[in-house]
Length: 154
Image (tube, rainbow, N blue to C red; front, side, top):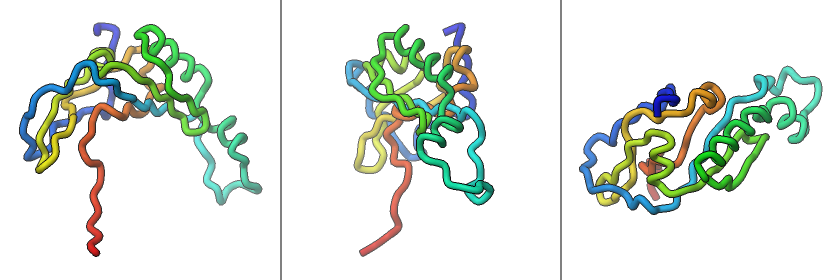
């Protein structure tokens, strides 16, 4: 992992009040979504003299093809199948065994009991190859903790 760097902004702790509940199954197949940087900053809609089509928006402000190729090369090197690529959404989904993905990204993953539920969470930093530094903005999918909750009552 010496060629990897800490992925800035990825530091997480296990949820407050959660209790260790073991390790997740190493053979579990999971999907990660990697969000890539924009090719160029998206314009403010009010500043345009016309609406851009989805294709124009993707072409001008979607993911850079070089960034997509770099992630594809990383996935191929590790044997992770590509589930989908969206230039417009700047996302690439890769899949693989949890243990292999956790090793590739330096993820410390465990099961935690949170209230009545047992969820997979991670702590510490994720790590990415130096070649991908700055190309990836987010790595989603290791953690299953609730991201939001409703306060709506019926």
